[in-house]
Structures are given as structure tokens and as C-alpha cells.
Length: 231
Image (cartoon, rainbow, N blue to C red):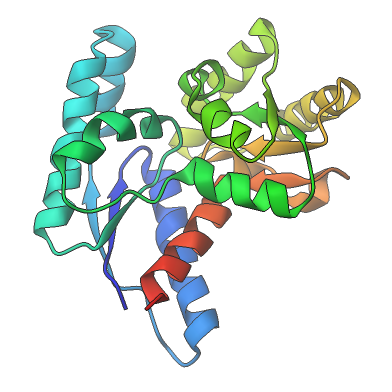
């Protein structure tokens, strides 16, 4: 079994979900009481957010993730899983500076969307994810068009993630707000919804809406276990 290198702390809530899912999927796949072989480097979210949102210093934020990547590589990891969507924007810059590969979250998501036969999906996540291009760039390779909510809706999604979910708060009111937004996006042409922040699947379940949803957390963890168990 290959050793998975996790970069977590962004937030601790989603990192805990990753740890649980990786072990549940490993045990379900192998049986018995098997658990995932992994190493975790947990960065300080407060420092990361300060660099990104207050100092607006993307280079400093990227350096934090690079140090974490080097740490798990030094710890014997065979590949890296970032327990956060928006941090994947740094992968193209960091990958040439380390000797082990990243398992990209958008790649795992694109494969699932293609398998479902969809060609147009909406992306929900933090502002950097929705307004960035790394999802669009990867999904276009699968023939999938990516929609994002309008500016006011992006403010709502980003705000609820930053002020509620990363602190472990998941309310019925916010859940209903997301369901209403997803229905609106469906009416605008989205055939499915990417839950593109690793906290959103803790708020929204497939039973909440009659529309295909893609939990990036679940898809990423499944791909990680598959990669860890591959010959």
C-alpha cells in the first residue's frame, strides 16, 4: 500500500472528513480492520487566510503549501492529497519543486462527471475556487463546461463557508439557501453541481436535492485509495 501524504488544516473540519473517508474506503475495499497508510501535515489556517485575504500575498500562501509538501515527501509519502479545493491553484507552481506527484481534486471530479454523462455543471466553493480557472481548465479536457454563480451568490457561498462551515457550523437555514441556489443554477442550465469546497458535502447530502451532486471530498478520497492500492 502506497503512503498518502495529506496536506490539511485548511480547515481542520474538512481534514477530519478526509481522514475518516480514507480509512472507511480502505477498510471497505480491503475488509477486516485495514486502515489507510498516510502521513498528515496540518498547516495553520489562520496564517494561510492572513496571507491570502489580508496581506493578499499569494507567494507567501504558496510557500506555506510548498513547505507542507516537502514535509510529507520527507516523511515518505508516495503522493500528495491536498484536503482543500482552492489550494490546488498552487499545484502547477509547486509540482516541479518536489519529487512526488499531487493527486489533483479537479481531475478526480472531472472523471466522475464524464462517467455520469454530463456536459455542463455549476461550481460552488470559496471565492478563489469559483473565480479561478483551475476547475474550468481541467474539466474542459473532459468536454465539460463549468458555470459559476453570479457575484451576489458567490458572496453568499464564500461567506457561509468562511464564517460558518470552517468553524464546524452547519445550519438548516444555510442548507436551504444552498438548495435554493442549486435549483436556480439548474434552471439556468446546470445539469449537476460540483460541491467544490471540502466542507460543503458536510452541509449538503444527495438526498437534499433531486439533482446530481459531486462531492469533491468523496471523489478525491476514492481516487486516493485507488492510487494507494494500485500496483
